[in-house]
Structure formats: C-alpha cells, structure tokens
Length: 128
Image 1 (cartoon, rainbow, N blue to C red):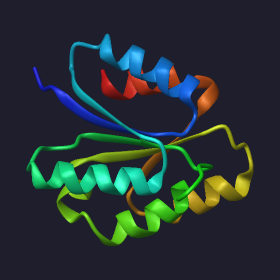
Image 2 (image 1 turned 180 degrees about the vertical axis):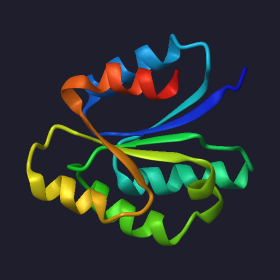
Image 3 (image 1 turned 45 degrees about the vertical axis):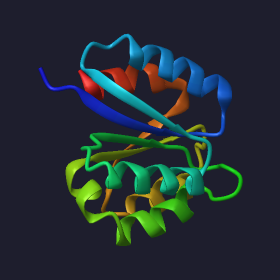
Image 4 (image 1 turned 30 degrees about the vertical axis):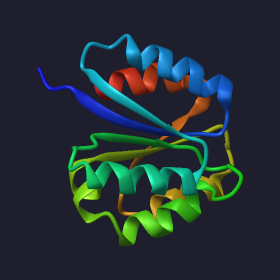
C-alpha cells in the first residue's frame, strides 16, 4: 500500500488540528507536514526537496499572514518542478468569493478547491 506524504498549509490552528488528527488516522498517510503560511511552506518544501522524499498532496489555505496562498502559488508554480510533478495541490478555504475560485483556477498546478466546511470529508475522499 502506498503511504502518502502531505503538506498542510494553514494558519488556523483549530482547522489544522482537526485535519491533522483525521489524516493521522488514515493508514495510507505516512507523514504530515504543517506550515502556518506560504513562506513557512516554501521553507518546508526546500527541506523536503533536499531529503529527496516524494510529496504527494498539498492542501493550501488562501488567507494567511506573512505570505498568502496566492503569493505561495506564484512561486510554487514557477519552481519546485519535481514536487509539482509528483504531487497534487488543492486550495482549502472558507472564502466563498467567486473571484478566489476564479483566481485559483488560473494556476495550472491547482487540482481543486475545497470548502473548509467540508474539509475533513473532502480530504479523506481524495486520499482514500
């Protein structure tokens, strides 16, 4: 059975706690990395890439301090080719604003948009 490595990028501690708790109960999940903002995520990607591990899923919040999700995507889409080619990135947001979904769709690397209200169910469905 394949074991997945996951990066969860979200500044909401409560959401992160529940998603991490659920993910850790799924037998196909190997490692869960947590980043509190886009810059923290880039640092984690650099370390992950240096370890030459495969990153399978990235779940990215949009609204975060320091570096938001769209700023992260600008850098991620033009860098990290190996990780981008091996992983699936999903936006996870509480934003219902159509412009956020439209902007997310302009990034080729974004596989989907998950509403935070359904995050546990949707992530579980994606991974299993």
